[in-house]
Length: 325
Ligand SMILES: Nc1ncnc2c1ncn2[C@@H]1O[C@H](COP(=O)(O)OP(=O)(O)OP(=O)(O)O)[C@@H](O)[C@H]1O
Ligand SMILES: O=P(O)(O)OC[C@H]1O[C@H](OP(=O)(O)OP(=O)(O)O)[C@H](O)[C@@H]1O
Ligand SMILES: [Mg+2]
Image (cartoon, rainbow, N blue to C red; front, top):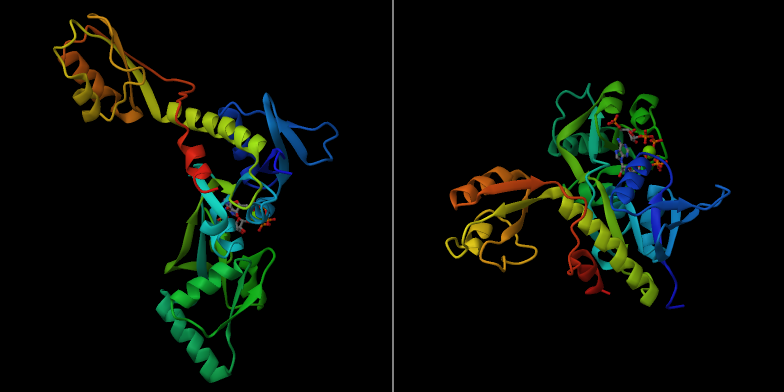
């Protein structure tokens, strides 16, 4: 029981699928789908103790909440919608830089006087008073909507649960307004809807999420360290550059302060010899300042490189999660 494999839940369809598999392969984690293709299961090449499950983004949120999956990629919107108290059952390990979308309150463009939530409050009260009807909101984000409207102090409304084509609801007459996810705004505009000025409920992107409810036995913990170690190594490599410099007799410059000033690290420590080459790692946008500073400090030559992976003994992502289990 305690030694079950780590279950990694990966989007099987929809917008997150392609980006998610690209993300894993960048980190040197090759998803291998089992032969047959029918079964939505697989493995990670060369990483024992992992079972990959292909699921829809919303199922992934549910499985992380229940503990059926240990680790998964899904939208923050789905985590916040599906879980009443996300921090109690999952840890959002890191945003992934894709799947950007906002959950918004949108009303018909024809409602020219309605620009903010406070205007909507008036509309809702008037509808209730004059017509004895409640403002209808079409959405699949039922929980996020209830929370957001409660915070805005609006209570005169009714949710009409929508399972697709939500933007069509006002035109078809099944609701007055909608709450839905948008990226480019094209679908809203095509349906003559506009976002309220203070109607952005959540800015979401895909996240790597870990379950606090799953059984974390030895096998799962071991696999977690490997998987998160590679992900962190890729991220560190992508956001930093390696800077090498040949310095004259050391001692002349205070390497530690120079590194600190440029947010650089000395991953292998200070040079040992009197004429040693030094290796630094600094943020990608800081390479020119650091190189100039090294030349000014007497460096004969400075080389800057992109790196593929930067592994480190510390595994901050894994440690953060393990500390909570
Ligand atoms: N423009 C977008 N519209 C919808 N979702 C987006 C968009 N951009 C990114 N996403 C993210 O992708 C997640 C999954 O959406 P997607 O539509 O791909 O799933 P799906 O497989 O179609 O599921 P469903 O059938 O329930 O919509 C969203 O919850 C959101 O986090
Ligand atoms: O702001 P935009 O860039 O126009 O994107 C928003 C649209 O994309 C999503 O639908 P999707 O295509 O995923 O279809 P679905 O509703 O069937 O999931 C979402 O539900 C919106 O309808
Ligand atoms: Mg969709």
